[in-house]
Image (cartoon, rainbow, N blue to C red; front, side, top):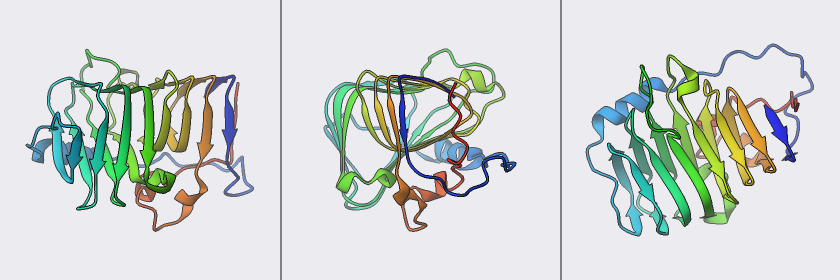
Length: 219
């Protein structure tokens, strides 16, 4: 982690900071299955209801969106070479089922970077529950191809699981929840680990229960 002007909050899970930690598990099979199976295009409406959706061409969303999960989860698969960008907008999650974004990766190269971006985004999630919004990335033969950006005053409530990503960027924003990634550059931001994610009943725990927050090294 390369961090400047950044505040990190949370607590130790254990007292063994030098313990050898195994590599985090990948989610490739789950992500790729959803890309192959989902066929409903992500709607352009202001309210997106429960269901499975595919992003199979670049999408830039700039109008406020409400994810209505009262009838069940909203699952979005992003095709391997396409983008999903949220810009200058509000995201609201209504309901107690999760919103999950599954981003695939090209095996040869990604022309459009970032793959997923939150730029100047305000999030309003039920009871500030960070387990109700997740972004998960499949692995790639070249981790440097993959990119996720959270920037420009974004208030992100959720979890990010990208265990082999090597160029995640968080700038001028606050992240509430948890991030699992290979390498990240963090500038002038706040990273606030949500200890409620340690509860096995949390919706997002399957993606982040690997999280190791004991060894906090900032340089």
